[in-house]
Length: 294
Length: 294
Image (cartoon, rainbow over all chains, first blue to last red; front, side, top):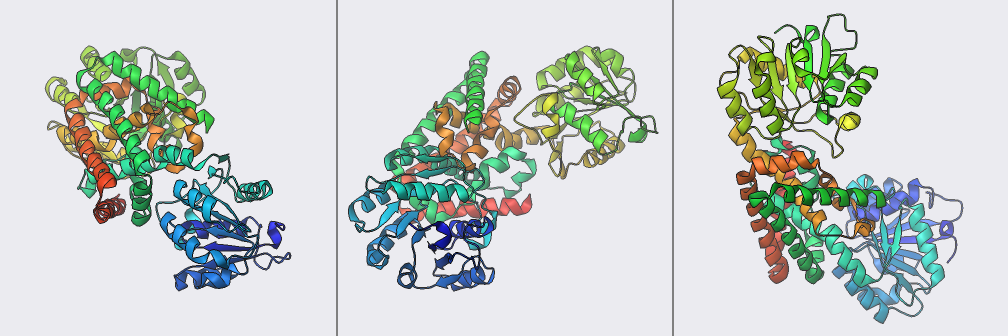
């Protein structure tokens, strides 16, 4: 790979995350507009209004309605698509990539993508699956500015076939985008962990809102209700797909959570008081230990 | 009541909330140190170190280990105690208040306190139960600076016997402390609403931490896991007491939540997909409507 400053970087899907990646590339001076080294940011999206706005704002150098035309020019591609769209896209456009292109994605589940790429990717391409742990409850390109990468976690689930130098290259770029810790694990482990830290949290937030119809309840809210339910403003098709795709692991985690909730419920109902306090103290200590590790 | 600038204001319990109230009184120029109008902030606490630190920092004018000595001087008293401690305190120290004192509290449940005060309060005192919807997962006076009141909700559950002019007086003070909306409702309604917006949220956060022993899980966390579990770092004796005191309503709310969680679980497991999406879309729309009302 040539130095990132000289690369033509393509973003497929200029939504919240694609937009935020482009903005970070610009704002951090990695691929500045009219950069002296010839690097460029291209983007492909079905929404022409978004492409025009991004180009006018100088966030991208050029927008494409047609992916094949863009891919011919790219050295490095970020696929910012929902998992199922991504798999279809790769099937349909495998031939369009330039030889040697380094490809990565941002999808919230990795098992199916990793399996498909391990098997079907062209030999002269490299695909490193990734998952930036950043986002915003307001989706789309026009909210991309709200999506901060600063110090956030990033997970990579490298394939056996990935070139070590490409992995290093991508990790360096991710750090330059502002992310903090990068964790490399296999796709199955990723999906198991994410079922808990991300999908279960979204299901819980949704259930909390689901069980109270009175929207004026917020006048009785402190910060905790706000914090627990902000993510209930979800990108519905994306999350429905993530839940279904990872359903076995997610259902296991929901049941685990139900077990803990039930135990607390019984202690609240029946005591003994010191057992409730002991259990809450263990929770408090564990959460404080998590803070120190994060 | 005399103008607040001329009042001697007593804070009983100089913890997170008592400390934050004193700081807001100072920082917002309501009762400045060495104020020209003679107003003062006194505080009583069992922790001498806290009293000394608060006095040195100029947050209070004088600290008291003995409540009776302080109460003799106060025109207005904030009781910043846990509910059960508060009830015992009022029983033991009813005689110590100056005639005409306006008293308020900050406890997170109101039913038992309102009932006791409606019945047992001295005729020449006025007690307006209150609940500031602010806090921090880190408790105690030394974290009081982290506790912002700015724009937060405040709930008052006035007694039938409260003097209208005192209620107005307290409301004006609450706004000057920085709070936004003040809602007046009866104590039972307060306890019903709070079981959902506050106590249920804390039980859920605790259950989430309870069901995962691996503290290194945070490296797979995005903002949502952080947001949902921050309040699991709880003040254990206080929350255990709030849960138990309001257990009937809280248990009803936990079961309601379990019902919604179960419905989502079934849709994730069995579909149909469009029904899951419909339900999530309803949740999203409801949460967005809540944002507009808050």
